[in-house]
Each structure stands twice: as C-alpha cells, then as structure tokens.
Length: 136
Image (tube, rainbow, N blue to C red; front, side, top):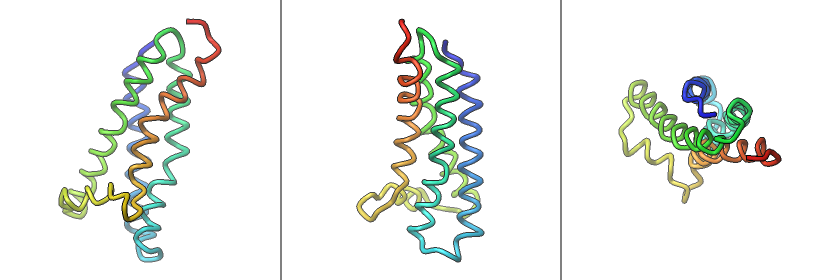
C-alpha cells in the first residue's frame, strides 16, 4: 500500500537528522578535523539512520504495491534532502550554488554522492528484502 504521509514523515525525520548532523559538523567538529574528514562525518553518520527509515517504510508499505511505495520514497528522498542541505548552507553561510555543487566532486574524494545514492537505493532494497518471500 502506498502511504505518501508515511513517506513524508520519514523523509522529515531524515532531513532533521541530516541538518542537525551538518550543524554539529560545521560548528563543534569543524575546528578539530580536516575538511575531508568532516565531509565523511556528514555522510557516514546519517547512513544507518537512512537505512532504518527505509526498513520502517518497507515494513509499513509491504504488500502488492510495495514497489510503487518504494519508488515514491526513492524518487522523493534524495532530491528533497539535497535541497534541504543546500538551503541550510545558503541561509546559514550564504553559500553559493557552485560551492554546494563542489560536494559532488568525487574526483577529490567527496563522499556526498554516497549519501544521495543510499537515499535512492535504501527504500528499494529494503522493500525488496521485506517482500521477497511474499506472493504478489
């Protein structure tokens, strides 16, 4: 069963965690670690939480239309989380769009695409794992 309200609430929980994690990384940890370590911190800390939210989503939307529900989450969570992080950087540090897009520079070791990929893949993988033994 597709539950857009559940998808939104779980995204909101993810967005709050990611933004609070960014605030901690930008204020408390920023003067203690090099920049690349802070970027890895901002990506690795939310990953287990994202997977947990994907599992909750998969369990609540299990059934014959699980794929549509997982696809809804997979298509909404990554771009809206990226937008929320951009708006955080823009309003907090007056960060330019080009500076934000530098977070996607994998050629210098930027880990941010990993978070975006997990936001996309986790709902689909969790949905498949929860529903693989059920008859459709």
